[in-house]
Length: 239
View 1: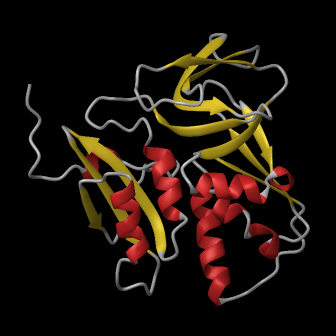
View 2: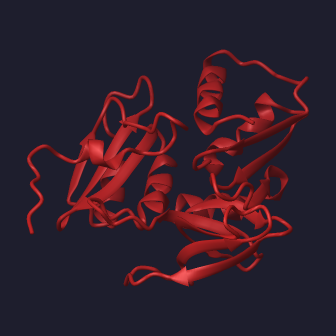
């Protein structure tokens, strides 16, 4: 099992120091959102590996599996235009349902993913993840249900799409109060924000775009954005 950040580091290193790891036969990755943009570059690094993405949680592992061979150019294009993160088909033994969320932008039958099965702790698990099922029965994730300080219901889909832009290493999108923010971390060597990032922010009605040298991530998986750490110091919660 390989975490997404390790894959990202390997791919970044491989751009400047091309290698071929042809002795690796299997690679499973998970524990955080895995960008299809990164997955499409893996066969050059691991030409003989069977690559799969595993989606699950501490209470239910696995929930779904995505075989890289099943990812199409259409899937890549959809993800780059805000469809979210594709995590594959529910595994055997899992019963999955979508609990609708009360949000005007929750389209495409989006809702909280709920799973049940013999390997699910307590029998049933509300994942807290917002997603939907496509016409092929596959799960797409778009964000988290949590609405404590930051409204991140659609953060993942926007962050993933922004990270497809040339020159962007990672993005974080969130909302505090009535103001939306987009933070971007640029690729090494990129000195100025690409015009396409400004266009992206404008297209999605982002109130403020900020550049950071680093976007804080969780310690456990080193892949989940710590939104609370990004909240501007001049914002004060009221009410």
